[in-house]
Length: 428
Image 1: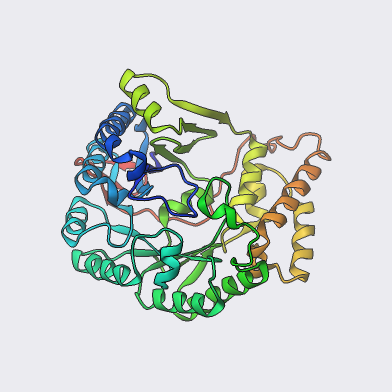
Image 2: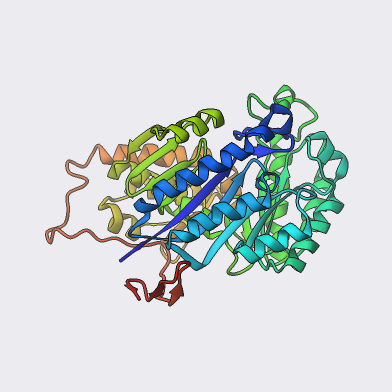
C-alpha cells in the first residue's frame, strides 16, 4: 500500500522584508531577484533527482511557501508543479496551495495558476488598518486584499485562506476587532490568526517590551475575541491559530500536527519521513551551487526514537482541538500516560483543558499558555518512563498496533501521469 506524503516547496524571495519576518528570504533590495532564474533551475533539478525516492508514496498535498511565492513568477511556480506532476505520484485531487500577497499578483496570473492545478491560496492580509500595514513594512492596503479576493474568485479558486496578526504596534482591541470582522466578511474558507512574535534580527526587535506593543493581557483578550467572533461567523477552530469552515482545514499543515510524512525542497526546508527528520542548508547561494555540483545539501539529520515520537504526539496533537487520547497513545507507543493525565485534570480545574469522549484538548485559554503546559507534560512523560523498566516491550503477540487520528474511508482517486488509484492499495 502506498503511503501519503506532503510536499513543501520553499520560495525564499520577496519584494521587501516585513518588519516582523524572521523566515529565511531575500528581498529585491538584497539582490534576491538576480538569483531567481538560477534558483528555479536548481530546485527543479533537486526535485527531479529526488523523484525516484517517491516510489511507494502518493502526493496528496503540495504547499508553496516563502518568502513570497507570487513574487517568484507564475510561470516558474507552474514549472515546479509540472515537474512534481510528471513524477506520476501527485493525486489529481491533491490540495495544492501557494502563498500570495495582495497586490503582488494579477487576475491573469491567478487564472494561469488555477488552470495549472493550484486550487488553494493563502493570502497575507495581516491587518485591515492601512497605517498599521505600512508601519510593519507591508506594501499593500486592505483595499488591495479585497481586490485579490475578488480576482481569485473570478479565477475559479474555491478555497481561500487569509492570514491576520494580533499584537501589532499600536494595535488596539478596537482595531483588532475591525480586522477580524472585515476579514471574516471576505468569506474566506480558512483564516489563520497569529500572535506577533518579536524575534531578534527583525526590525521590530528594537520595540521589544515597548509600550507601543499590546501587553500580554491585551493580546490574550484579542485572541479570545477572535476565537469567539470567528465561531459566530462559522469558522471552527481546529488548531491553536487556525479556523476553517467545515471541510476546509489545511490538509498540508495537518500533516505537521499529526506527525505524518512530508518532504521539503529549498534552502532551510525540513522533511520528516518514517522516523527520519532532516533539513537542507539555509543559504540560497550554497543551495544553488551544491545542487549544480550534485553534492549533498543536508545540514541537519536525526533519526527519531520511539520515545521522541511519543513526545511529538503530545506536543503537536495538543496544538489541535482534536487533542490526545490515552487509548490511542498506548496503541501507538505501548506507553501509559498516567502522569500526563494527572496534569490534564489539574489543567481542567484552571479552565485550560477539557475532556470529551475520551479525548483531552486545550481550551482557548489553555492555548494561550500551551508552551508552558506542554513543557510540563513532556517532563511528566519522561518521569513516567523512568519508572518503567521496559517501556517499549511489545505485547505477547509481538504485534504493533498503529492507529490514526482520524478514520479515513477508501476512495477512488486519479493521479497526474495517467494512473488511477482504487481504494487505498490498488493501482490500475
